[in-house]
Structure formats: C-alpha cells, structure tokens
Length: 102
Image (cartoon, rainbow, N blue to C red; front, side):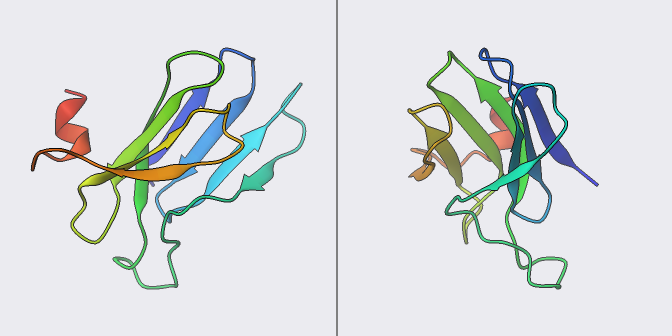
C-alpha cells in the first residue's frame, strides 16, 4: 500500500492513504483523527479514489499532498492553515505530481 507520511514542523504526524483519506496524530502519536479533505475516497473499487502518496510541509502552516488526485490525476491538495482545511489545486501543466518530486 502506497501512502504519504510526514511530520509537520509542529511535530504532528500526518498520513495520506492510497484510498483518499488523511489522518493526523498530534502530541505523542497515541491517537489518530481523520481529517476532512476534498480528496475522493475509495468506495471499494481499486481505481475509484484518489491516491495520496507524497506529503511535504513547507512550514507550520503550508503543506502539499500529491499523488493521483482528481479525475485527470492532475491536482494536488494544499493547506495554508496547518492542515485545518485542504483545497484542491490544479497543476498548470500535464506532468503528474509524482513526476515533479523525482
């Protein structure tokens, strides 16, 4: 299972899954909470949801989640408030997000 896993600068552990879900564990990583995002969640079919496979924090407020997101797989999720809210952003060209990371 591919996934995105990263610590934020605030010390929170974030997980983006291959079925379009995002979780965060704050403090000592003893509990996890699901975070609401506009990513399409898997409905039981292998190709129906978004795959979140890359997560990067730039500072305590800004981060990007990438992978195979959107109907054309050309979108990323971004936050500018420490992960409280996430929005979709369409990439300005046709490269896949995972190609940009390599």
